[in-house]
Length: 221
Image 1: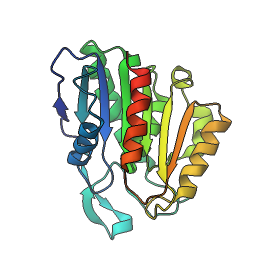
Image 2 (image 1 turned 135 degrees about the vertical axis):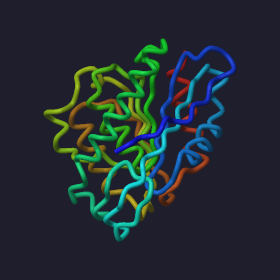
Image 3 (image 1 turned 30 degrees about the vertical axis):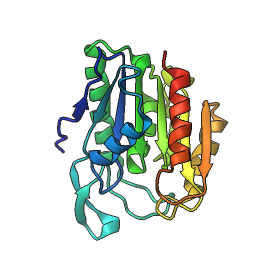
């Protein structure tokens, strides 16, 4: 599968941090640009932002219709096995972006992975297995694919990396229960989770943006 070069936005000054934003199923990077802009952090904290686009794939849940997807989705049920092959393809791509940022001079501790929905799933999956000690991960309206495998596959480098995890209690796309299962699993493994729930569906709220902005400010020097 071929992945495109991501859209990159540079801050006005020399970049000191990088945030890689991953969009959801059937969307594109434009959604993440809007979210990043709403945070109003890039120029203030010298953040380079990367906005990758997932490749087009046939999605089983949608009758085989091709759309941008980080991995195939069989159904909405969180227990249904998704395509591990696709998940690992996207993981390798995201790891390549991380390595490129490090080669550009960004310390690995200054790199954050962020994603909404399916993009958040890849951000979580990758960060927990990354051999680079990342600054943190932002998981919005999402879940951890193949969560039972994390016991044996997690990397020691990111066991203390902070996780901002937010989900809507009325989410009909990725059920709130799926997020709770992920939170319970990661909490049992002693990950540092800043958990937020909001009375909303599969979306991002203004309150969530404010909470995320505060979370970032606490961690950006």
